[in-house]
Image (cartoon, rainbow over the protein chains, first blue to last red):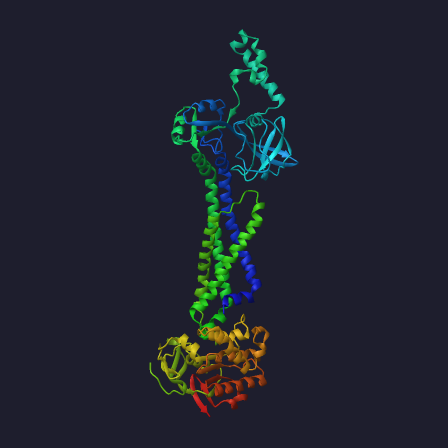
Length: 403
Length: 234
């Protein structure tokens, strides 16, 4: 005869409510861990999926994600000359915010070096990848964009051709992928008026120097488009992504490029560490502390609940002692209820989490290892929480029944 | 461990129980000696504060005496305040307890309450289930076997409590005001039940009571006053 389950059946409503409350608390603990894992995954998923062995960025910057990096696009060609380099693609990353259908839409735009990089590595969940050099877009599902949606960016209209799943930036913004040229056009887009003012200022600057006075015909070119003035160079890119040929030592290739005075180089792991240490670390500590506090609060609440449940049964426990029940029977009654409370609370937390977490604005990723750890922690705090009740039960005097 | 008369359910010699010390010292039981044989039912009478319940806690091995000896079923259990046996094991094997309130476990059915007494003595579930039904039938409450205590009347609860007390075939049943919460008719029925149990189950029964209306069912009455046994009537 199992006294713990008989007691629970008898007080089913109270036990259910208590278990539900513990379940909600544990769901928060689980959610905190899941939010941290989501941050890590958001921060590293692009670096992981894009698969580049090396990231070449502006000298002494932690770009292109942890801070801004600007390098000339022709750096691709210089990198390609390094022995062991298989491919080198330009990469652009920047964030835009637009109003779309009356709601703010934030997108972290990643420019892919078309046609070398067609985004075949993207996890396409609907539609297709990029098949044209211009005006196509692949967006993440979290942006709520649909295949076929049209979006005005810069001076062009982009059509959403495909949707990815789980591609968000470290800030939680949905990623959107387009060709590098389009991404730069969006990034450096200026209004017609701004262009006109800049061209006039350029002509004025020309006439303020000797060159303008001696060669006044240059003013015609100075008042034209940027592409007609070689001295201005091309738009800057954020990074060059490098793939190293098989058989070559990645570290050695990185060292060779890093020796150049105008760039810094990070390996894939180095880039991930930059993201995790720089951006996620503080969030990790914050969430970790919250998690610890919530576990302590859960343990205290469980201890108080079990203590109260024991107090309610104190007369029965005294009676059991009087008729000669062994301590193990009384201990089992309390501990089994504590473990059942913890286990059911954990299951409720998991099931509720599966249902609720997808509606959270940021990704909540439940990792099996974290769940196992939490299950063990819940088991341990269930036992610890029962100790207060057990201590009180052991002190119950069988003589109280006669009083 | 010493042994004595085999037919004696209880032998107590020179029991004294003192609570507190110095100015607050209270002698609750003073030099009490009594014996109860198997099959005998004894009433313990006395005004409130006479020390009846304290004596019951000593005889029921719930508290140790300061001085004196207690032998149960011929086995020395207390020699002064020193326990000579595992008290809890001894209580579950040799004693049955009945109180003013039935004190049934509220989340167990009548049958389970009776079985519990046997199962904590490691008796197999099959055996305990059979005996529980036999006892409930013997006490006339078999039809309520699957009911929770909250669904039973006061008299029915007391019968289930008696069944629980008999579960392990005790040598001695101690009852503290078992009719205190029952009306006169039901109170007498319970007292008669104790007499029946004592005679048919061959157990010694001590009943602490204020109820003088059913004294005729007892083999012997003992009166207690100021912690001492004053009178004994057969």
